Structure formats: structure tokens, C-alpha cells
Length: 622
Image (cartoon, rainbow, N blue to C red):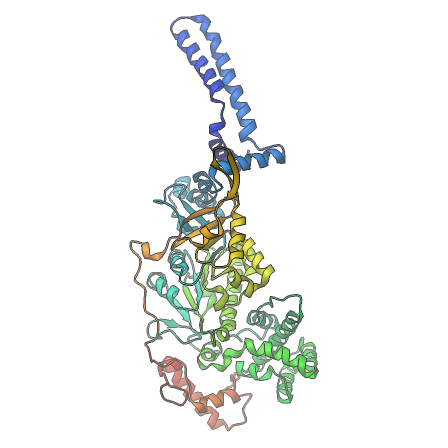
């Protein structure tokens, strides 16, 4: 018999112990005891009572096992048993449910699968294993004793749905502090990064990717990532374009059709810019089409020996299409590269290939380091940075999958990705990621502000797919959407209640009003494999030795980093990345002027980048 079958039967036996036929069973035990006692006293005839008592006890125990413990032989019996247990528990998870499906022992038992490096541990070592090495605690009751804590393994996705200022970020900080391997966070604010900074800095390097320029460069290690790196390969360029332009939530309408065309063309432009030694300014300038753009892209694609002709045909077709169609496609591409118009974002998303601040994603993952990606929640500029942040997040996931394949299929220790404010800071295909990442050793912890935001970002089908893929759904109080609250109440279910002496009826386990009025840091937890659990979500403020949050923001009134002069801005729009021989492929200016610009760029890098000089657009402060 399989070990899991024995374990399931043992838990079922404990749940149904009260249904054991105590009267005939006790009679059999009593008869056996009397027979043994009288035999010891010398009454030999009493020995015949022993097998009779044992037979009676074994018979009633066998009947009980087949009727209440063994796997049912009909759907009717299975449903009847589940209904009975649900009524007995009031429709909520019991201690046994938590111990069986979401307890610490479950994580330790699965440790060799979750982290292959732990396969060599003895039984005793596994029993003493810190559960945070293979999972996270998502909720608890009481003192956190057995059956009072709900845990989620490192291969399960967690999704938090909570209104603003409900405490979800302080709970996510705990997951960041406990991450056993590399950590990636995305958010529109610095609360998450500041909460884990001190602890993570003790374990390895901490990097910040800050296109919005809200982090103080004197307090962190700011890194840059070159979007065009590797785009000489058309497959890589297409993957980056897919990350820059998220799937359209209206997948059956014209919007997705234009987006598909825009992704193909944007990948083509990224490819052309990479092979011709240009930068993202060229991509942004090429997007609307036009005679000059046509010629430059044509020349770049002609130089590609394999596949260049086919891509050139695509480019010709786009430039020759009608204005309305071309405008729709170019607007989509323009939104994906709008961040290029921001000096700070362009400086860290399109640096020189030899920039010393470029991050090595493979090293970051294998060494278990930390990377914070900071977006911007501003209504006017937040969507501008989301494509760049999303592209880097997608690239981290891609590299992590490659490393996982090299390690046998699962990343060990796992990469933890905490996607706070996932509906604002990024535009990632989480409806697909949530179905695949866990088995590769990539843990996703996602938070959004409401179910409406889920539908707004991923569409109705995408949001339903995401909800269906998560291992633990945490719903905090505070929502004012009656429809969403009713949906959660219906998922929780009903139970049979005794309203008065003569009235029994099914009522909701939790009403929509009760869910809405959940207390601070309390949540409804829908965990795979068990009934609803209502508990307190652990947060960093209640930890005894919680680190003091670091202050990473720039001082009020300080200049944003990586500002450039008007002359340099003009030069960047007319020149791009230099070729290997040091000449500029895209400039008509004399070589001595190009050399002066090159020297100015070298001085900036030697001073620690554009940001350390803190100049405004016209050379002064803002």
C-alpha cells in the first residue's frame, strides 16, 4: 500500500473515530478481558470467551473500517461522507484538515521533491528542518500550534486580494525575509524593498532597478539592464517584444490582432537596432514608419544573411499599409517604448554595452542575491515604466527557467518572486506563469487590490485562470464589491445549522458582510485540498527581531539621477550605440565632435554614472 494511502486512511480513521460502534466493541473487549482474567484465576473454561470477544471486536472494527474509513465504492457514499464531515465541522477547516493538507509536516515530507538537495537528509534531520526552507506561513490562529498554522510550499502560488492599506505588503515582507534563495520584488513603492533590505544585505548583494528615479543612489546599488542585449538573435528580440506588449484582455476583438502585429514588428525593430549597433531611441523613432525609418531598417535587415529578407518583407508591408492600420500598430509600439523618452529610464534600460553597472542575471540567481524592481504608482507616469519593469521581470524568469533545466528541472534553492501591486507595477502573463513556475523552482507571491483589478489587467478568462492556478488565495476585508463578495461566499459554501428546536437549514459559512468586515491582517484563506480557513496573516511588525526598515528614498527636493543636458539629449536622439571600432554608425557629425561626446560619457561613468552628478535637463538642478 502506498504511503500516501496509509496516511490518508489514518487521518480518516481519526476523523471517524466517534462512529466506531462503542457498545458492541466494548462488549467484545470486555468479554476478552473477563476471559483472560478468569483463566488466570484457574477457570479453564473461561478461555473460550477470549476468541469470542476478539472476534466480536474485530468484526465491529472491520465493519466500521469498511463503512466509514475505507475508500467509498460509490459516488453517493463519497458525497455523503464529505457532507457529514462538513456539517460536523461547521463548513470550515478543522485542525486535522490543516495538519493533513497545509501543516509543517506536509512540507517536511515533501522536502526531497521541493528541493532535491535535501533528498539526503535522514528522517530525524527532515523532522528538524526549518519549514521556511521549503515554504511560507500564510495564516495562523492561537499560538500557532499543530493545526493552527496554514503553510504554502515553495511550488505553490499565493494570491492576496486586499484593498489599499490593508497590510498585505507587511505580510509579503515576511516572505522576502524568509526566501531561501534569490529574491525578486516588484512594487510601486519602496515599502517592500525597505522592509527586507537589512536582512537580505547580510546574505548577499542587493540590487535596485529604478526607472522612476525615486531611490537614493547613495544607499543602494543601482543596476542597469540593456533591453537590446542579445537581440541580435531574432528569437530573443521577439521574446523581449512580447514582454513589452502584454496580451490584450479582449482576445477576440481587433485589439489583440493589432497587438500581435505590433509584437512582431517591435521584435523586428529591436532586432534591427541590435544588429546595426543602434539604441532604443532608434526603435522609438522607427515605430511610426516613414521614409527615413524605412531606409534605416531596410539597410539593417539587408545585412542579415539568414532570415533578413523575410523580415524585410514584413517591414515593407507595414510601411505600405494604410494610415489607420499603421497608426493603430504604431500607437501600441509607442506605448511599449514610451519610457525611452524619460532620461532616467533610458539611462538604465538602454545603457552602453560596456556599462559596469549592468546586472548579470545568471549570477544573481545562482548566488541567491536580491533584486528590487521599482515602478511608479503615479497615474500619469506609472504605465510608462511598466513595460520596462515587465520586460526585466520576464527576462529574470526566462534565465531562471534555463538555470532550472541545467539543474535537472528544478531551481534549488528556489527563486522567490514577490509581485506586489501586480496589476499596476507590471504587465506580466501571470495567468500562464502561475501554471508553470512552481514545478521549476520559482515561487510566485502575488498581490492585487481587488478582483476587479484582476479582470481589468488579465481579462475575465485570464483572471479566472490565475485564481484557479493558485495554491492559496487570501482575501482580506474591506472590499465593497457585492458581486465579488458573493462569489467568495459561494466558494466557501454552506453548512447545516440548527436555528431552533424544530428548524434546520443550510446557511452560508460566511456571509458577504462578514467577509467585508474582516479585521486588520485577518483573511479568508482558500487553500487547495481543504475547506476554508479564517485566520491572522503573519506580518513583519509582530516579529520579535524584525529588522528596522531602511530608508532608501531620495531626499525631498533632490534631483533625479541620470539627468542630461539639452545638448546631450539632442545628441542621443541623433546618435546611437557605437560599433566595435568606435565609429558612430548613425551620425553625420565630424569624428572630433563624436570623440568629445564619447569622452563626456566616460567621465559620467567614472563619476559613478549620470546620477551622481545630479544635473537637470539644462545643466542645473530641477
